[in-house]
Image 1: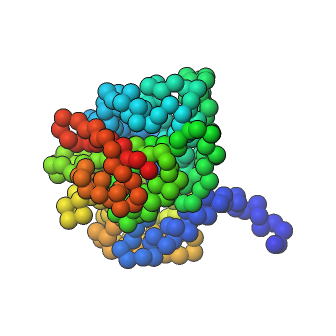
Image 2: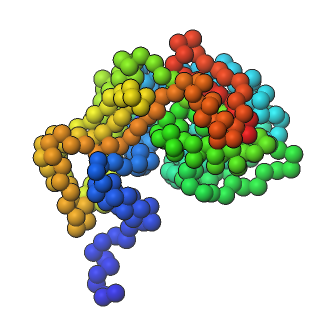
Image 3: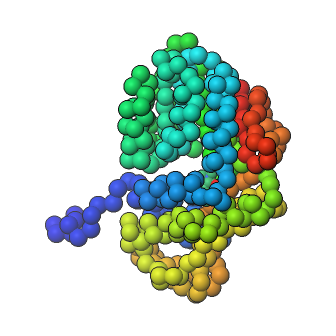
Length: 320
Ligand code: AVJ
């Protein structure tokens, strides 16, 4: 390499190179679409936590209430000695409710998350509150093949996948994840939160909040591209779009071009027609029986189900 070149540009991290490659691929395909995992840098993780506290966003509140009311019953399905693996751990708010219902000396807690700094900060907080708990954070993409720490003798491995995060997957991706989970949790089980099919107005409000936090969260993927990758696009060039698509039983989020525009990334230029979108997320809704059938095909045996009075959200126990 020629001397004097390297200082001009800070070297991109492996994560940034992956983001750049995936964003190029996202913008080159028709229709344009990117994985929602790119929402979750530090800003995005913080915005997501704000979403969870919004009055319109019922899933977090409803699931927390279910965990609060039934943690002991849920923990009773696990058994006394467990390696508890949380997929996509985030702020660790929900798992604390389960941990509070379990004796810590029998638990090995393995929170997995793609956002390293966020995960490690949350683990520090948990370690302060639970001094006797063994915590082994794993910074990884849980949809990709990964290696869990060995499970102690006599322990069952139990997965925890709250928040209806599985809703981000297409049915085919959900099937692939459930198969991977069934294999690595064999002999144990999976406790999973799913958002249920409901009135479209309730769904619409949850993804179009009055304060615009969801809009900022959606926009963050392009703001991140601007800050980290030097992407260029007109300010105000994109707007938040979220709607329920009943044919697929999913909320779709998009960033919609408000005008014909060009997005520059590296040495490529990508054209958007007015109204054309970059699809950023799906959030699939399920029925309890529909999800149990999906889980069964992937190798699980459906067990207990906890749901709220409105039947808006459900937590399911699945034996692996
Ligand atoms: C984290 C995927 C469960 O789909 O409700 C919230 C993400 N997107 N508001 C969801 C999200 C917009 C959330 N999940």
